[in-house]
Length: 497
Ligand code: FCB
Image (cartoon, rainbow, N blue to C red; front, side):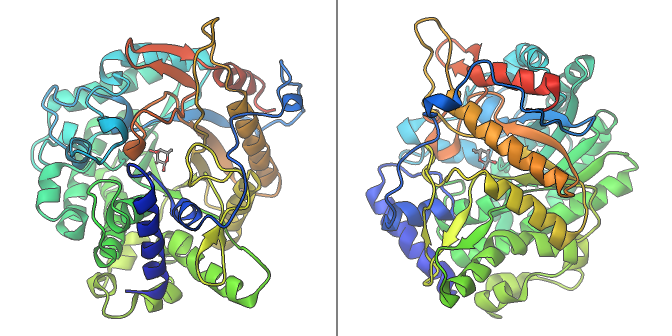
């Protein structure tokens, strides 16, 4: 096991010993909560009063014509209807039903009941004026056991959704895999098994052929890094393992799955565009020392280059390979020709940005900025600018879409029924402004999806964290547009800030 990841594991262990219930976290959070070297306050949701003027003044920041403003969701987080119309079980059904895994014992069985309420949700999207909607397709709805003949009722649901989007003039962006692996495939080894990547390509082919006439943009695998870290190193996401050796083999197979899906699209004759959805973290040295700079470089390798170099340069970063070691399961698992598949040309890159990471001389991390309710998140809009410009500088002018960016807030309807999430407005405004500046400096950014359209099942956090533009009262499934949703509608209308 590499030095860097061993340190992370130790810190993670320290965190889980203190945190009641597993926290859904990124590296920054793992170390931040574990070693608590920083004194920054929890923030984000309480905007300073001078920043909450209503209505927002027009700042004259206009985005390019045709810029597509959107919102994002994923299947397991919103759909519910876990046992309906032939849907099979996914690893998240298993995981969420395992006592002690999810805060308050929550599950995605009902979630925001979107499977039944999709028409109402489509109307909400129209009310917001969304131009683009990013959602995911549930693999176990299409193939209950992850292989074989597709389930027509599952495909029909997504066709109804797609038709509804087209009727409302909203462009669909479909993610093929947002973590809900069919349990049957997990039982056969999951992403540790190379064969799962082949099964994924077959599933992708089924979906391309059935829905390809309706989907202009496909995303392959959502945040492979989160599966690797949260699912296989820290174990607080499905499938819940703590096995670093397995984790990086999983990283390879997820990327192989991505490349095979890109090839499957080209082979299917379907005309849509396709790309990966990567959560990228700008990494900065925590201080001026040479040691911190060195540690930051390797950290960046694990956080960003491990997924970018392979797809855009056809090679895994050498420093990460060296750190993993020649005998690691991952390095031994890479076969001739794999990197060629992984680097099959894509049409766009989907970037998900939430937080920066500050790396110390010993390879740990510290917080520099206020965090949100999600303890792994530091609020730093400048990081959006940095990561976008860096990707364009290092990997060329591939079109970019932001497929996730957002903030959890303790939203509660007031006496008047309104949800006054001014902190989210401030957060989004500052991140939009950073994106605008990146476009001005040459980043080919074409769309922006706020995470999330609806409050939803936030993985290990259950329903406690609310990330939506739209409030969901889970008891009644009533939806309420939050203040941020009204504000976002104005942003979309004027195509800027
Ligand atoms: C991302 C996930 C998404 C949601 C947000 C808050 O990492 O892709 O499903 O959990 O974080």
